[in-house]
Image (cartoon, rainbow over all chains, first blue to last red):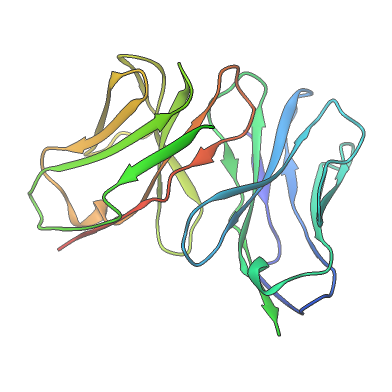
Length: 114
Length: 113
């Protein structure tokens, strides 16, 4: 069975710093998708970034980028120039190709300090 | 553009009462629809998903049911709520084909008392 592990329950950094959130996963599949979702205090779940496993190039969305290491089954999220609005729970999620059920990590609580 | 609406935002219901949460999507057709539940401080648990009108798949046996009476409408129901049904319920959609990434509604905080 597929599993997703986020080993950092909580992190805090100063505003404008760069922070990296870790995510590892376990699967025997070759085709899959990985996601990072953000859940701010409002609890709305927001898609931050998406990565297809068949793509070697790391996905980037503005200040958010990933380091996807397929062989190591690692999918970390880097937030550059962190802002107060980045304070949120961050969830890593895995989805097998043509499947319906996202497998979620336990989340990392990120606090950006002014 | 596509939007997802979920209501109500907050609900307090007594044990044994019925439940109906509604989710609608605008600006798309034939979306895949999902109901998730999130316990406090925890990740998300998939409850139901639907790939078309009248098609419902259940992931977790429980006190809840789902229906999709129209293409862009997804309803979560219960005939008799339990205390353990308390939680944060999120509706989500994605366009077919799969794996594009979900867009979530704003959620419903349900407290069963």
